[in-house]
Image 1 (tube, rainbow, N blue to C red):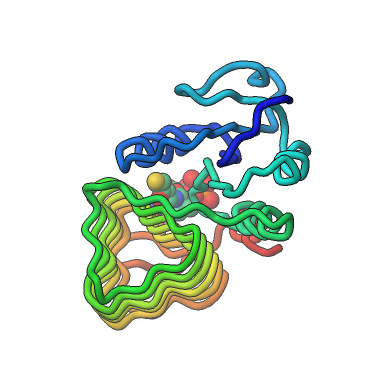
Image 2 (cartoon, helix red, strand yellow):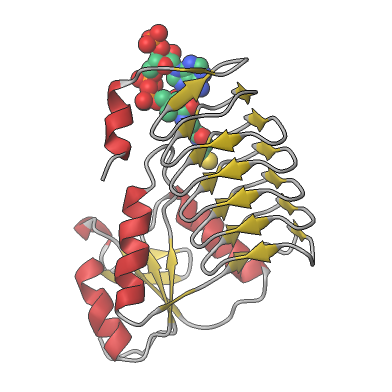
Length: 224
Ligand SMILES: CC(C)(COP(=O)(O)OP(=O)(O)OC[C@H]1O[C@@H](n2cnc3c(N)ncnc32)[C@H](O)[C@@H]1OP(=O)(O)O)[C@@H](O)C(=O)NCCC(=O)NCCS
């Protein structure tokens, strides 16, 4: 592995295409290498990015001068894997790369933590705050004064009305709407298309209009 790379992309699923597209559109020109657990991908290219091996190479890339990492998978309910990868890469001294698609609208009074990915058409409105490693996916809306914790995924087209609180590791499903002032608990999941009008407890999955708690076998996957 003679080449020195500036940025390491971790995981090359569908979300990685969106990440790379946003990076290229925002003018990112530094060199990128990708790592993926799927050995059949090793030696191939993903977009124009070489997939040079598995996650075990991360430490070596960091030693060889890579400065940044960016996570290339998103998840649709359980964000513990994204947290684990994020914490591991940071522990190796790599910095989380921020992703901002140029079509995203981001208020100058908002605060966005390290390693967040703000995708095409997303809106982060006045005085909203995002923690670290948050995804606001395509056309997601985070209204004024929202507080979003670490490792949260606001999926495509979801809308947090004003002053909503979302705790760490929660998933806000695509096309869902959260009433102003509502709190979504730690590692909870809002199902696709839900309309949430009451607070959601920790480690709870809610679905439907209006959203109600649903007991799902998979809910336990949220627990570390
Ligand atoms: C809620 C969710 C997490 C449940 O996923 P799951 O644990 O795999 O559950 P299943 O698909 O097996 O469905 C279990 C039950 O919940 C129901 N259900 C699942 N998702 C639902 C939703 N969004 N709204 C209403 N009901 C839903 C199913 O119909 C099924 O009902 P049943 O028990 O009466 O048969 C998932 O369906 C979801 O909405 N994820 C968000 C997806 C998303 O945001 N994608 C965008 C990524 S950018």
